[in-house]
Length: 70
Image (cartoon, rainbow, N blue to C red; front, side, top):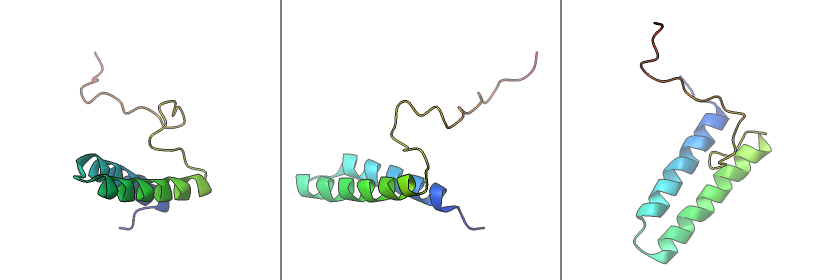
């Protein structure tokens, strides 16, 4: 199975942000953040919401894992 472009770019943006947070040097962190910008730019070109937007209301919230009917 092949993942969609939006899913790929979102996943890569998250991975690069995590790598930036783990970076040891400022230069390494900057390179990772540049890659985050590249992937977020690709998402914008596809009219997809940014994965780092706190006001992202376009994406539905995941239902709770144990929200069983009473």
